[in-house]
Image (cartoon, rainbow, N blue to C red; front, side, top):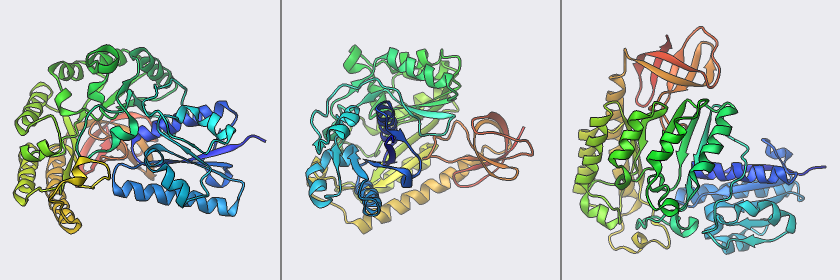
Length: 436
């Protein structure tokens, strides 16, 4: 009887892609992926270790797998991802039920490691990306496409380069081939991801190649939407802006992780941008593409951050009214320069600042979405909520992290349908409309 594997995937969309690659590799080795943990002989927990909350969730997922093993001792537990890379020795010591630890540089060897019985393999975080197939775990109409692995930035709060290694870009030909295959298979929207998508190609071609990649992907006939995530601000060139504007399949949406707006905090974060530089990027984007949706993330409670600097961030939100914004309380990550800084802010104060900023952002989002009422927007159908109501996403909405559009209609719609909707109402982060 063939073995069966169940994946518990935590963290970001890059981890989702890794799980899909590992699922394919195991399938080729005769180990079938299943979607019910009760059917599994092998449980793979693909972990995250970016912030404390993510680490706690990863440990909880491992313990869920352990509880399954208690019921069925024949089950094998495999732990992969960033937590496995960072804390392999501690995990093996504290949770002896784990059968295999596989680091971020060894995921393409998961079949060999499981079959050989090797206990721990975490060497070579800079191993090359291998081109494999994927068994997609996302809904049939969209997929994440990882264009590079690793990161050459050294932000003072971030541990990722120590866990994922230096940037390694995939070849443009490999990316175009993969996207063509999955688009021909029915995927209508691809979401380009990496630790730093804006630096795509620098290691491989000697220069940033994201604009050229967008133009090549735009030529794929069966593809409808291309969404762009994780573009560091210093990589937003006029050439990139022009490629977004001119490529009709590239959505007018860009995710730019800004993290703060105060120059002193940006220097402490080791971010290679200033407040004036950030404002210039926003203005250039909006001048070239008036309906561009700008998404970003920010950290509050960074060491030594003052209340005035928090207010400066709030005032920036009010003035520049970004479309989608996430705020996170600073998490002191072991092994990062920021964790050793003087002036650490206590958790209660970080949460107070977080709640203050989220209150500002909620009002901004509410006001911006009200401006969409009585306009027509193209949306992609996600799911049926109940009779006559469907959930959908517009170009404003990346799956899982942004809002949605609730569509009222008597027509029968299906996941992946792209339709026009007249917007009739709004909520804090969501829109409500009726099928045209």
